[in-house]
Image (cartoon, rainbow, N blue to C red; front, side, top):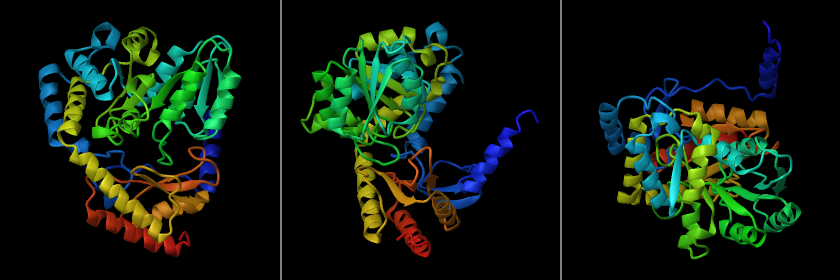
Length: 398
């Protein structure tokens, strides 16, 4: 074997008690799913509104595949763009309250490509100011540049201002944050961030992956959430990134902002330039998803009703759910091996949660992350709660 170090790395994971075999879904993504042949209440899916199996999305995908074919056949800048891609971008821009939109094949591609395109490759010419708990795709995007990097304490506006002062003198300054933080489920104060960024001549970027389909009217996202509260205007925020693969149930990422922004990214964002476009069926299903969230607002209402019930019960039982403000409900255990054992015992009891350990979260903050969806029944949520209570007490987590 030419890479003996791989055995050592895997052995190290096993010694830490964090090595897991990949779980395999044996059917559709449903609130109760079959995973590795076992029926479990699925508390791990990002399918917030249940759209991955919505009849309208499936019908749109099948019909578009019949009409347009199975694949796009090329990258977007050559001949991979069809009318469905343009229609999707136009509808997304309207949905997000912006002038224009550009769709990427994945959220990680949207983040990496946009950050790299907007910040200089010259050493320390530009600056990026980033929340310490931002998603890995943001961190990766920043690493692709040679900008000065300033990391501010999580949602700490005084520290953000201090970092903005340090960044003065840079050609461009980007302030970037998650809208909803995927591991903790809390919401970034975009209104306050926007004010500070404007004061110090910076532009703003939000990763709305876990807010799209979840926050704001009809799930329009974090910017819309604050606009609706009267705390800011759409034009107060520069760049909105989102995904089509979580709340909207399909696949892809997008960047919304001005037409100048998307025109530039079409010529400069490497993942857009060098990735084959979405299959037509996927683009059509994404369009259908946007229609569903606007035609069926009760889906978002049911999502939040379920989240309030489940998280309220977790707190009553004595679980530590951290600072969550959304349907993401982390159950913080702390110790890594214990967290993974908790996850395995829950699965054996018929509940699928995901153990999250370092480096995804800080050391000492390991947790089983659960996510509530609009399609969970009250009976399914209660089944999960009963299992959590029983095993939590047995393991002295509560």
